[in-house]
Length: 633
Image 1 (cartoon, rainbow, N blue to C red):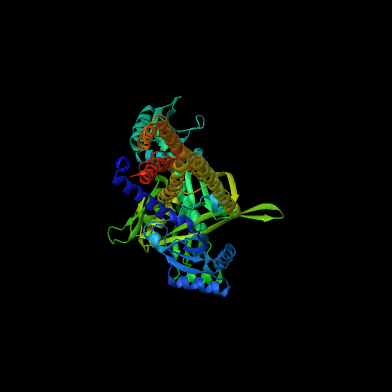
Image 2: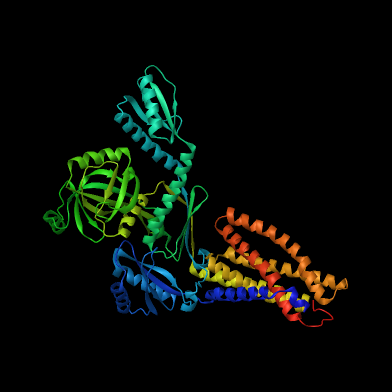
């Protein structure tokens, strides 16, 4: 009974549970997803059975065979319709056929439909998402212009300080950005008393500014106001955050199913669009600039003047004819009250009086002053919020890239002014909480916080992706096969036990990566191959220890027990150093380096379990209750 006592029953139970769970959660990766087209709403258009019937009717009319259609409900990304196809050619034909039928309210995007059985999905089983290098698509690396962030903020402070001094009735000569120092705002005052009063007022109102006395000449008393370092850091991270949100909005309009948009370092943003094969279209959307205009409303669709303008095309000289996303026409004034550049913040909420969804808007002092003047004179009259987007159409003409600017205008809100307001006000009359949060996002994330330049771009074809998968799979299989063969030849029965553990190591590693949601990339596959190679190290140590004990005259069972006990300390030491390296790659690396590090980190933990605990369990089972004269090692 010595062998059994070395390995208690609870450990057998633990090994059995881990191996069964590992097998179950690794299984979804064997089910290859099929090509699909995902139809989703760009704004708040309905995604329902009527749309599903419209989509299937369009496909039948175009004689495009599809496998199935399903209506998916998703709280975070919105509802969508998924149509499955037998191959990529049918998928492309369907996307091309559906785009003109669906119009601007919906997108038809390439996607992959899971073929994992429902029972596996019910227990949380899901395959690993594939990275751009395996699936194909486009990748952009963009640099955020941090100087642009500081410039915009200093221009705001220049306006706000001038408004503050006027409000406090402190006379000043000028408020302008410092031309010599290149950073900060210069305030020139007429007397030392005014400078002292201005210094106190600015320091109290704008706590993010360092206010110091500058050089004075004659009757020019100068104050220097510069942004504090911690505020500059906040501005930099805020700009990255806002640009990420804006890019998310814009890329959703492209209809990419699972875009990867992430910050890299302090001033770079990486965008990976799996499945997108047209970088010109992607660049057009990503590089777009958007803003908002608050203007006086001159009439909606019920107004005879608006109906006349739509029919005849004769728009009054002081007005614009714009449409909302449902296609309803509006006449709005050409003179702008305030723009999105003067917007400081926007958040969705509920109107305290009616409880209906609303958006709370905060303007800077320059915008607030104009808004106060306008609303004071126009209570009870309509005001419109117009979303203005500037994009660049890129076409290849005679082998040359021709870029044409294009601006679109859309009325996103048209409501009556209920009272006088200035810097803080509420936009009500919205259809739903979703529409309110969407509007807040458009207001806050509509324009980029700072200019961005695309510094590198690349297109990876899906055929290369498939080629990568095939090569990666061959590399794993070849590496695994050679290691298994070497172990079996050199260590006989113990080598075969190590081989079984190594196979389960791969299964558990894939299971953990699937459960965590690690995106599988080529560096990730390299991490798997390296893990398999390193995992056998522990078994080599154990086998050599057992051989050593046998040479020293120990009985076979005592040699097994001593082999595992003595090898464990060395295995732990070696793996701790590997873990530190993998942790460093995971926490400090980005992109491919991080992908490699994550796979290595998970692989080290799984290999420690399989190469020690699993092999010990199998060895104990084989040799339990037998009178052994020798060991096959």
